[in-house]
Image 1: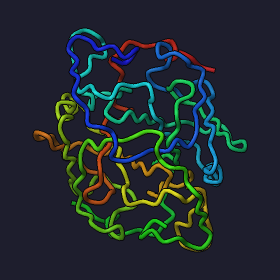
Image 2: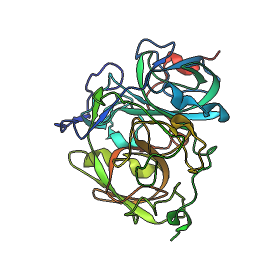
Image 3: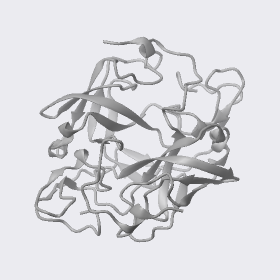
Length: 163
Length: 163
């Protein structure tokens, strides 16, 4: 699957455990130009269209300081995806690969991550380029890209541990 | 907060909505050398200790093909973290910044992401370097790093869309 939730030759479905180990809160909504799974990019591009992250209350104050960074990591919930495939056939050619070896939206926890370029912030809206998800995708988290971020908190012993 | 869930001068707590918009299933367990939040590294390093991702059934077959990649993205659940701070003071100096401008484990959805180096796979266990989380951290997802991964599925119109 991927396009419209069909199961293809070579794909393996499992009986998935109930997803009740922990719960998510949608912190916002992503607005993109793509309203069909058949049009959405496979991967975002940094010269792609500007998309909007609309942040819900009470989380808007958590945006303070985000404008210090050029590249952000965005985590979102691929709400239309099946969660029960362990082998998938992306080319629909009978060849299947493990779900964890793919970046397909179909996964036990359909978590999408993108690195995006910050265009600007206006009130509760963050404008970015580089997304690859459907319009109305629920937003879960937003943080500076690890390469740009230096922890503000003092180091801890594990920071110096090598093997 | 960060170290032991205390609230510091300058930090802002909100009444967080119930996290029941979507549910997570733990697909495995992460084993690391760190058993205290006061020792865990702020950021993982690729010459750090080898850590283990123990994958639970029924997801083990989903590892097929993962060994094609050198760098993996790991997503985990920071299960001990508060979820209700919008402003945080990482240095505990009275200066606070928005949660989304930090990579602190304290966030509305405490999702941690790391890029790790694959050391090897044996049965249901994946050995990696570069993690920065506590021993026994619940594992949520595992995928090839975006830089190494080229989608197998055919392109879609959005892939070519620029602005």
